[in-house]
Length: 248
Image 1: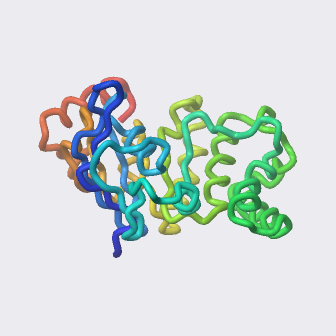
Image 2 (image 1 turned 120 degrees about the horizontal axis):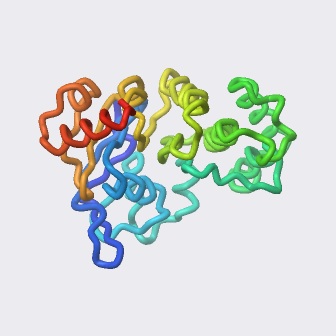
């Protein structure tokens, strides 16, 4: 499998606080890399740096062998190859579900409106939301809104899908309906990098789990290695606290 994404010695600070500390990561095609760690460990910043929402201070980020952290790179060109789903859905409230999904394919990728709508309906049908195509986001449950946000990212056929704590804003009852989409995408071979607090889910979908603390990857390996048999004392402590909170 080829390397789709590669981060080399990436550093990022905010107001003299080091958030990513010489972090290196390789993501192979058709794999799911799961980032775990406490709030403030650097997971979200890492995803935002990959998507060029944040500018790194040092190091390099490569997508399919091209350095996308180069200041001369076209940010729009890079983002055409990446899909990102946030905690807070970020749907346009004044546009219908179908309009939300087709906006980027039409405006950014130049796909004909009829074709974009047809492709969007295929995705909506696949994920049991076809009957919501003409609804506005505020008429949907949180789980439905997040599923629409995932479909919107899929509509541009991304090379890598970035998912940032996509269930953290949801009622526990709605979590599984969102995670089921990610399981389907894993089955399809979508290349994904996702930050999550759902350890059981991480066990199901991850090819590699990375434990972050203070902007460093302290431990990485298969879900069995990291989640069931961690070697690092800080990983063990984090998982113990998660377990005690009833989320493992």
